[in-house]
Length: 73
Image (tube, rainbow, N blue to C red; front, side, top):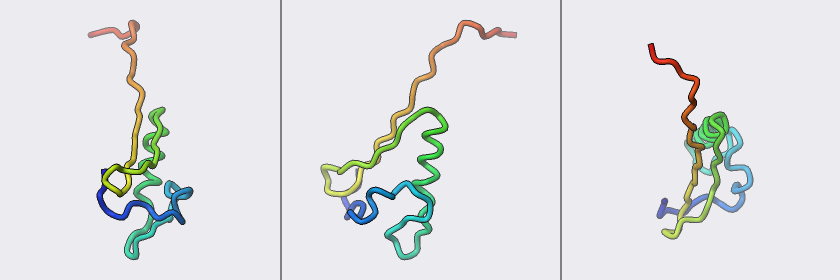
């Protein structure tokens, strides 16, 4: 959870797109990379409002089920 200003309303819909940033010195790749990583692993990432006033990013990743076809050597 973030207690700062959070994500500006103007970019909330685009926050996971590459090169979208509200920071003067930012390049806007961090959340785009995070989203690709999470999606590649079958998960989801969402922007939510933190009770502290800032942003909250919720990441959900699936658990891998144990497979019976593995052979120990």
